[in-house]
Length: 142
Image 1 (spheres, rainbow, N blue to C red):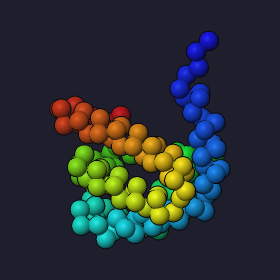
Image 2 (cartoon, helix red, strand yellow; image 1 turned 135 degrees about the vertical axis):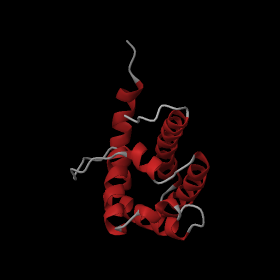
Image 3 (cartoon, rainbow, N blue to C red; image 1 turned 135 degrees about the horizontal axis):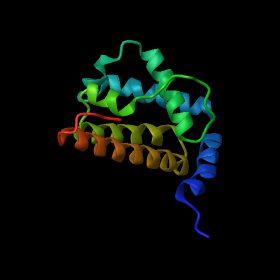
Image 4 (spheres, rainbow, N blue to C red; image 1 turned 180 degrees about the vertical axis):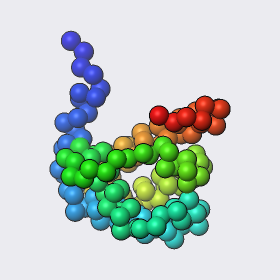
């Protein structure tokens, strides 16, 4: 019997969220987006954020759930569209991942940072694929 990768990863994600904890996820997100606002390249696409406190709360929830925590907000995510509207590019994603890795390393034990960063890299690959799809002429992002 073959077990699907999603089936195997779900318990690990729940463990990751539990190990890191919601308060630490909140601290990482807060610090990271403070750094983004000061970053010479990343601050440009993020200048569209009107309410940083809400943005940080929204992304705290996003990462909590992405790491396997239980949802506690009922606000939809439209990741691909938001990133396209902001003018996010694969080049900016490299800067984003570099800064995110630095922030994770400042807040977490190496194993926890590695687990969270792996998740961020997977999301980044998906965003890059959506970006390429968008640029190839198919303008509709589902």
